[in-house]
Length: 237
Ligand code: ADP
Image 1 (cartoon, rainbow, N blue to C red):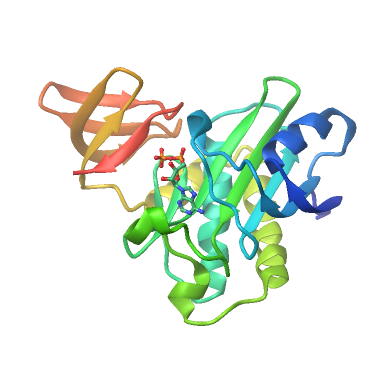
Image 2 (cartoon, rainbow, N blue to C red):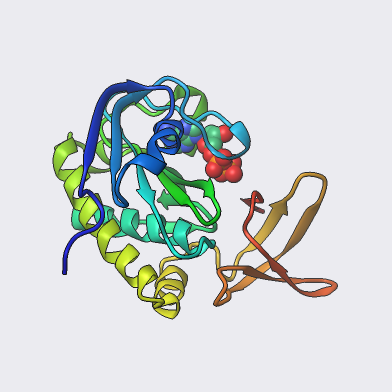
């Protein structure tokens, strides 16, 4: 099958944010275009939170033109990262909805944005050989730290692009069940007590399931609650 992801590559020494760059060009480039920058000066997480992106890490965004946009697109990114780490001998898991963790520390984040009906941009930040920001202390890690050596950034890049192509292919073919069950298998939150933080509200409960729509099912004192992923943050208790 013809590859979609990586059909066109745009390689930059520096970008403010690869997601912003990808959104600007999205309407004029083919689906699967990948924008990768050696460093980002204004990398972002959700809600404008800063994403530290010094040289040595993998900071990329993919332009997608899916027939529908839903939370499972984020899962496509997370699963591709987990597989890539596994290809390099690192066991990781997904902290729903959009982070990848290794041994209790964040190694990657996924940020999906876009314009419904036109395009989606899937941004991935993966700590590879970069120093992890000091202020994050023991909250973050990198492939270099886990493996005790540097790895080839271009090998990680090509592996990730291949894995993205695989999972996005399933998404395009409507194989959502497989995406969600893979995500559940690789999830680090199921069975744990968590706190969900929305703008004004906090919800505490046990994470018991991720349903077919990609929503988290929480068991709370007041009964079962479905949490759609939107912009909520999840913390372990
Ligand atoms: P959250 O997981 O808190 O909902 P986001 O998905 O919005 O957060 O990601 C942004 C957060 O990720 C930042 O507030 C910071 O704590 C953390 N962070 C920033 N840069 C990095 C990095 N390079 N590696 C790991 N974590 C990072």
